[in-house]
Image (cartoon, rainbow, N blue to C red):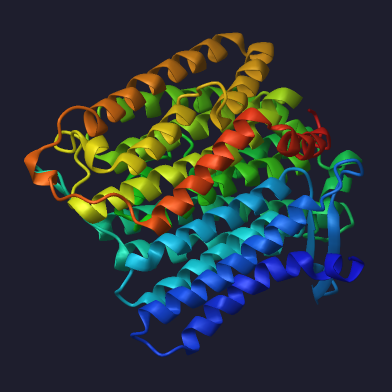
Length: 503
């Protein structure tokens, strides 16, 4: 097992990259063959993620599967240093699950199928890279690799939405996403360079997360520097996490994206932002984090309430889920900002739970849109009689979203609320009100879309395909498993949380 440990994390990055490069060499126009090969690559990626997570030793804790490959020695000191801890291990598993599910339901992609999977695997490799690298230069490199393919995936394979009075084109959604995320990336890069320069001034020029964390622990980054630089990471990474008021790209991006991309976008990509705040901001700038956390938890609370209120006013299924994601990422940001071990553990668990349930929702909405060519809940009435399996799975995902006990969303939100009540009582009360609003718009969605008598136009409507239902059933099983027995995840997460300075 030792030899595998040395290359396990590298393989997590290399396998999807190999899939992306191999796809380029395949002949065009072979959509079915491309899909089969994509299934193989994503299945291999999931298997690696499962093995890595299952073999993480939570008794030992800390970073494991450590390996390093020197890239630029000398004054820059840049290495491809890899390792995972209790925070990144669940995220690696989440990416593997959502990628595999997204590839399986992409059999409907017939236009330039090969190119679609080339970009999808490049994006996935970037996500894996962010979660496992321990060097700021490569973290930023993989961060951009995860973000930039989204523009092409939405711009080429997305869909436009006609609201009657105005049109939201896929090009608009793609460009808006790109502008916001590149803006956030600029702030992150400025913060990384500031850390490097400050470390150089202290005699250790390095991009190594371990080296920089040691300097922070030794007090070599003073309070003024940390207070000045931390908001660069909070806002820069926060843009990708859907932090209010920089969230507006997210619902438009969700709506325009094809099903698999929506699944990865909401299920995994938004978690990169929250992960970046934890891994870079909190680990390297603990005093700055402590000074800015009242601002972050306030903005996170606005996320929760604003996202829920906005979702209540939407009629488009994807827009409802898009604003719901903004609201649920608010819980993640609140949990982070508590600087409380329970609250922060709940934030990480919420990242995993929300990743699964929102990926499931977008999968099911994609199946509905594929058959009805509409996402308007005012006309999608009575679908439970025509699409019973799809409706049942959507109900489970919706109930998980509103925090029903026994499902994954409950324990995650409960931990976030506990941490918030222990630290910021007034904002915690507002967050609970946000949870109540979530129940309103979720139950409204379920009632208007699936209940009642179906319209005559849906008489010939068929249920989701066996492949879609298999993926849906797997996601539902995960939601139930985590909701009933969260211990396997929480053991790993708690170990990671305990290592965060100031928590």
